[in-house]
Structures are given as C-alpha cells and as structure tokens.
Length: 75
Figure (cartoon, helix red, strand yellow):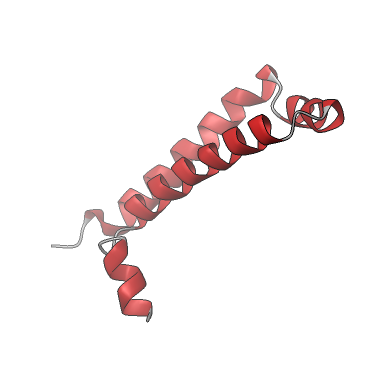
C-alpha cells in the first residue's frame, strides 16, 4: 500500500507538498463559503490577518526548498 501512495506522488516530497498546499487552500475556501457564521468568519480572519501572511509565505517557501533539496543530489 505504501508503494501505491509513493507512486501517486511519483516518489517526490515536492509534489506531495504542492498537493497538500493546494488541498489546504481548497479546504479553506470550502470552509469560508460553507460557514457564513460571523463567529467562524471572525476566527478565520483573526488567524489570517495580513500581518501574518509574510510568515505563511516564508514557511511555505522553506518547506518547499527542504522538499526539493531532499532529492536534489540523487542521480
């Protein structure tokens, strides 16, 4: 079973990370549109304040680089 999972990501952590980030974005959009509750919206907006966005981008960049470096020197 683990080999099937690895095949789905083509044995690439970078592809796994890209798909994870995409799915996280889709889940966030679904939650935002499905839950129009003001309390939930306020909680999401407080967690995703514009001042935190640079830190999210830095974290995504670091994980992406680490995933890419994992297989960079494999020939």
